[in-house]
Image (tube, rainbow, N blue to C red; front, top):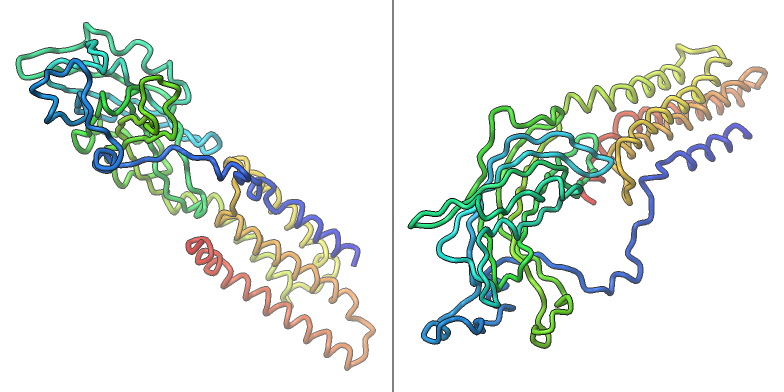
Length: 375
């Protein structure tokens, strides 16, 4: 009984201290948050069609925001350096921008190179664009102007690990304009192009790449004095989306096979093939320690999460296998010297434990997957 209590305590202590970390907002849920909306929604429901003072009088009646439209395209040279712990990836991307006419702001001042207003969701932002946006980088012709910049840095993304280690991830790179959406709109030129062998993240394959438009609508005017009452700041952007799928075989070899072997040893230990009482009692604690070390390695790969992953669910099933195997071994230890009736009852109890163990071994992986995918 003492060993059983210790086992339960160990299970409670090691069942993913990171996976159940509390990250709830609490009273922050009442705060207004930035929304991502479409240009059409912003124009129809939010944007005021009042032009700036410098717009010619004969054009004010038909004026519609924005003042400037810049078309943006992308060419991906490489994606690499995926870090699950930081929820970030590294990329080298060429962005190009084209526009027609002069780029004027709300106060009438001219911006020679719109890329000087570009911002990225990078962890190391200044490594990327501190040298871009120079006026001399603009190529001007009679039909329009263009420029290009190279972005080489580390970008943050929000990953979903519910199906880990069979997870699919979407890498995001947001390019936004620092000015109000009245002044600037940047519009996607269509799907990006890619360099040969651009994907250096070897345990994932790329399924889809797209460049989509977005507008960030902030519930504040950031203290700008000439905003009308109730008017809030919004800015335009494009989002580079790279949808990736993890290779099944890599995950199966790295995470599933070790757990499968340990579970199979527990089933053999519980069968009639093992009759040594010392071995039957020694294997469950050894299996528990092995699983704990395996789990610690997996936990060090992922960030702190507020939900259980598929791998966590598999570990939970394995812990129950250990517990059932330990109970069966404990009962088997005291089977000698019992009466015929007592031996019959003990064997019935052991048979129920064996059936339960096989049930968990065969059906829990499928049930765990269904639970994770439905949540």
